[in-house]
Length: 201
Image (tube, rainbow, N blue to C red; front, side, top):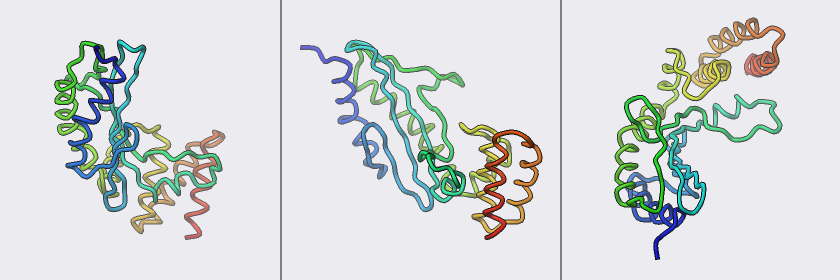
């Protein structure tokens, strides 16, 4: 009896992905792999978009979560959900194009495992290792890298990083500029709230 796509995904995780990530000290929950590094947590998570028992697609993301940043970023947001600080959709990279990986009853699980591991090693692990420090994230945001963020969220997180690194004056200066730029817009209140908090620290 041939495996359906869900069975193939389960075997892919157990035979290829789990052993690989365990070697790199990642812990799996569902189809998400994570590892704590200093002040952040690295996340690499897979999504299997199963259309029916015979076909689907696979893609994945690499994210970094800095709890210190998120606590201040979500200041005053009662219903705020836990989110990753920065991240990128990786998937199956072909040059600069993102392509979903086809899954079907004909999929060779061992070959798919080799493809995913190869790309995780070349792209995802490099990404999470590169940005696992506040300084690296700061320099990227200062250089205009937005990752998966709205530009206003990126600037707010940059202000939080300045504060965490003891550069509160720089944080307040950035927030003052953003408060002025966002005059009359809904986002302004979040900049004001964060500025008021940091000015009392």
